Image 1 (cartoon, one colour):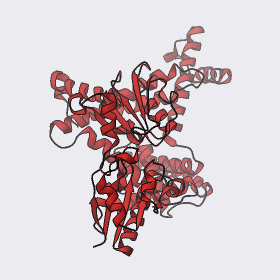
Image 2 (cartoon, rainbow, N blue to C red):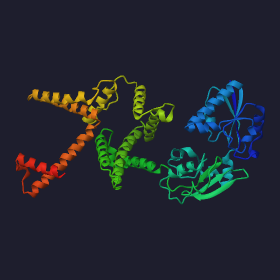
Image 3 (cartoon, helix red, strand yellow):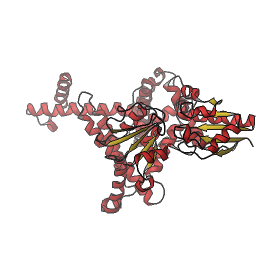
Length: 476
């Protein structure tokens, strides 16, 4: 089997590279180095570097995958190849992790001094005693979720990375102390003491930069962690919460969903205060989701983490144009790809598989019609759909006084109206809701106008009511 020997170039200075690593470099003529942006990279010369991949690839995942493929090919061609990485091969080296899991090559890793050893020496701390957590700067927002420190953050090679790290902690006061360690073990070593607010301004980050955070005011993702713990406490201690089941909570889930819709419709860009109502309603809806997850966790079925992981992974799978090699030219292409991936995942055979039958009837009709249209069962334009309204209205008249027939024909009429709305790009649920709001507003105006004229509304004749209605309508 082809062999790949992986060595580490230490934290910076060539003096920190081990004798064993130097011997391996001398013994293996086919050499590769992840990057030449390291003070000890010259020890591997002559070697092929992978710096150009970083400039060409769109994501770091693409970079790592390409490096692995090239190294496997080199080891296969030459029998033996050497791969050198900055620091230690076993500390935050994604390419080495991938190579060790690759069954096409035998991967031999030689230990090396890492930047961690020098960092602990400069900070004067024992990482075990202090319980320091090592975090990748590229994944800070997720990897440090729920942590308040102490943290040592690596891969902080640019100021934009430092900015992303800083912005990930919205609740930070800005006064938290931070220590930036740069080029450890070299003649150009620098230790900078700054604050969280100035993290991305105090230094010029480079590939030999890491950050030590003794303590944050609040954990990254702390609000969500605190919220999850509260949901579990309420489930244990509140008699009402204890009594709830998945079934009993359905009504509240629907209510909170509609209240979110109302808050969305009430949003006014000119009045930031309307955001507060949306924040509140989104929070209420989020609690319903948490509640179901807590019940499931209590039963040993799944957890909120499973819910978050599931939707995260699904979104990645269904966005191959973002996380893969698929190219799209429009939003319509994105939808088509999504549907194709969804069908393959679910093993669906019917166009209607996955359409929720429990949703409001207008939305249900809209969804069913859209699914049928995707497989070609549809009028080419609204001109084919419009006459169906008149046809269905006539069939209501023909139904006479038969309750069952009337219900059937009224349903067909509503279905035809939804079809016309769909062709016109009008969402029927929203359109009907707006019409109801409009009717309600105008009728409340009729009530006020009747009161001003001393009219008793229940006893007012239809002609007068119509006059009042037209007056309110004209005033609008």
